Amino acid sequence: ATVINYEPLFNTDLKYFKALQIIGEKSIFDRYKLASSMLDKLDEKYRDFLAYPVRVIDKIEFYGKKARNDYPQILAELQDDEAYKYQRIKTETLDYYNNKIEEFKIIDKDKSEFLAAATKFIDDRFVFCYDNKVILGAWGMQMRENIREDITEIRKDMRRKIKISDPTDEPENGLKKSSFIITFSSGEYGTLSSNSTITKDANSYLGDDEIPQVDPNYGYEFVGWTETPYGYQVTE
Image (cartoon, rainbow, N blue to C red; front, side):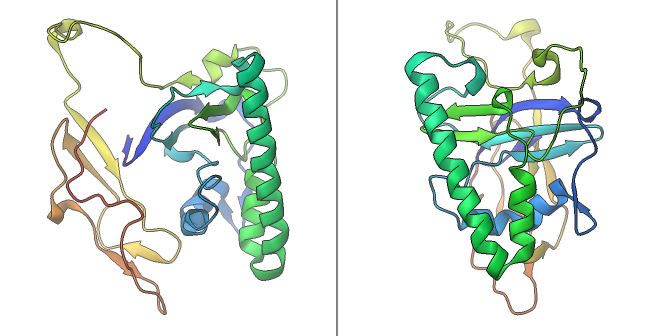
């Protein structure tokens, strides 16, 4: 899948984890779509903490906001100053979310329950670090005991590859990835008028007629996308 303004981090098979948490008869990942507008209103420094999940049959892919300066690294693999820096950022981020959980207990119990469930299990092997932020993958998920597979088998890397090469080099086998799946999300207070995903050729652009309309719930008004998809170029 391709998620606009996000980049892939990893995917994992659900067989390695205990049953997904259920909140109000919906899985925690179904709740993510409903909670996305709430997350967008959090402090900019912390709002991207929960990686964007995409369910693909029995696997889940996790995406982080596109990096601006750094290459995403895994917290458990950092050392020395970088490890100290991002452990501190992780602590600050969790403190912020814990405060929000307590705040929402008073004004919005559903949001409080979602955030508490999402941050219940923190495993540094699924925490990605870049641009002075931490991104939590496999959030709300608890690994089963006695898993024998190596973490690299459980957390299958999807990060972009860093390669320095001659720009005239031909891709392997002379083939390039020809198409991508684009996913749209309406947020918590509306629905999409058409399909949430479309397939586009690599390096093509989204047309205005390909972007679904958002039908807001009663009492709400759709004022625009968080990050505009108009004129978006489809790339890896």
